[in-house]
Length: 72
Picture 1 (cartoon, one colour):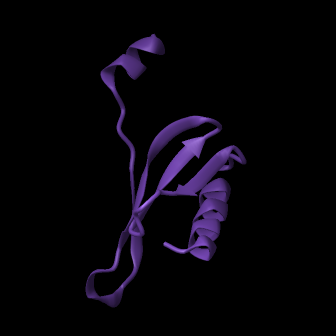
Picture 2 (cartoon, helix red, strand yellow):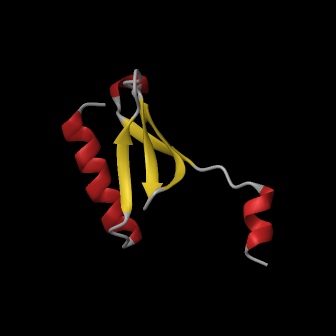
Picture 3 (cartoon, one colour):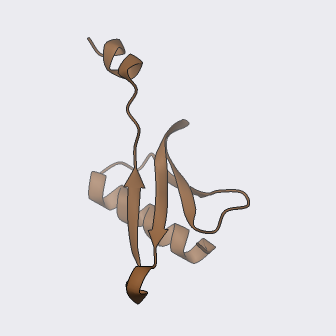
């Protein structure tokens, strides 16, 4: 992902979720993915899928059981 693509994804996710604190950040030494944060908290990885010349993106978010327990 180049800088322009990261910026577009950043703006899209902010609009989609209505949250200006979302940040898409390039990953060091990786060009097929970026990290997603809300504020300073890491929430997931955004992967590029170029299969069949149809570019798409997958956002992978892991939710730990301990995170769920903190909300109860």
